[in-house]
Length: 365
Figure 1 (cartoon, rainbow, N blue to C red):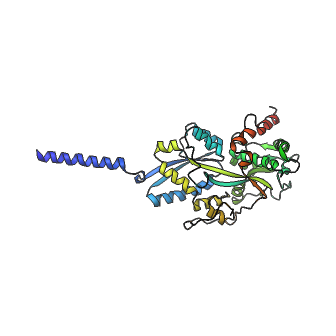
Figure 2: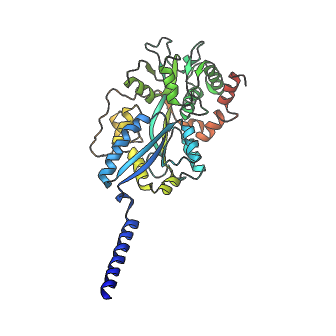
Figure 3: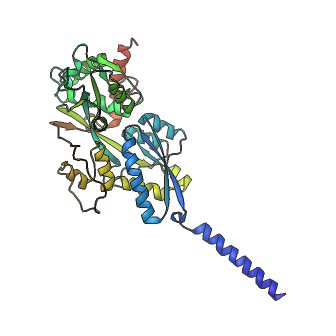
């Protein structure tokens, strides 16, 4: 029966070859792959522009279609959701401690900041003040937020990373002596107490808080430079006030190592994070009012400093919006002013933190 044996041999050989090809083909040979991006609320529109750019880039590089599922909510809530089992492949959050929570949960590698030139930060912004058209309350700087009868809008630091940036912007300005009448340590407490007395609404996240202001509630909103630009570009009517002293906001992004390994998406997830730092993605951020971190784009928008020099990049496919500018402020500081996030959160937002206690006292706690 040599003929039958030959047929059986051929059939078995063919099956083995097909199985081997199926098992050992690279991930990029799959027709499509799906990522889940868990972000904080404010940059939703920016990622709405960046994602199609990445999808086109990845298709050109690999022939593979990337489907990206997006989830947005307050940074702290998003971080807790991922720590609790929401299997996001990438997290783009408001503050570094929300990534640290995922490192502590052994979901994100402890070296997430070390494999890039940007310390893991996707974009930057500044804490600024948004006021009504023609600035009827004459708000020019932080000190004006303590005036009697003023209604201030800012989100809740208990849920919003952006709110913590806001409060630290005010506290740092006082600590550094840039709020007349409220300088130094006692001045910080006095100013935050006066500020809390004027807060009209504490929404759960930065986007919801600024929407409250846009609905006509409040005289001034403590918010982020990019959020004001988003409203202005949408035709809203208000003005932006840059405080003399304010904090530089730095928003982190990271691959969630445990989940990308579980999903088999590490290669494309890491490529997405790297793409976020590309010139075109950074131009997309700039067009939504975020300050870019890429040196080439920083130079293009006038943010050249001693630590960043423009580099050669591929030709741009994204044009910068000339209506968006990024002025310098007299005194710009970072989270290092407070000894880093660990100390800042303990001092201001922990159970016995200064801001926590002031809020509690204002509510009769």
